[in-house]
Length: 126
Image (cartoon, rainbow, N blue to C red; front, side):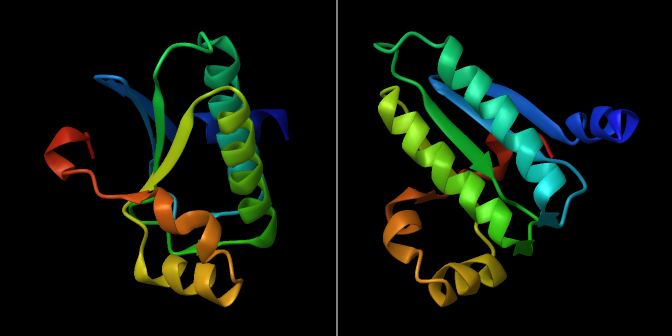
C-alpha cells in the first residue's frame, strides 16, 4: 500500500501561477478514495502553511475527470470548508459534463456552482 500511495502522489502536479496554486491530476479519469486522500493531504498542507492574510486561490483542475465517488465529494466539500476557515478560496476548473451531472444529481450545485472557473489551457501545462 505504501508503495502504491507513493506512486499516486506523482499523479498530482502543483503549479504556481501568480497568486494561484493549480493542482492538476495526471492520467486520472476518476477521483476515488485513494486519489481523494492525496488531494486532501496536498491541498490541506498548502492551506495550513500559508499565511492567513496571504491572498491565495487554490484551483483543482478537473480536466479529464469523468467520475467522483461519494468519498471524493466529501473530501472536496471538506476542503472547501477548511479553505474558507483559513481565509483561502478553493475553485474547480474544467468540470466535465459528467461531473456537472453528478453534482446536479447529488444536489451539490449550491456548493459547487460559484466555484467552477475556466482556466485557459495555455496557462497550465498538460
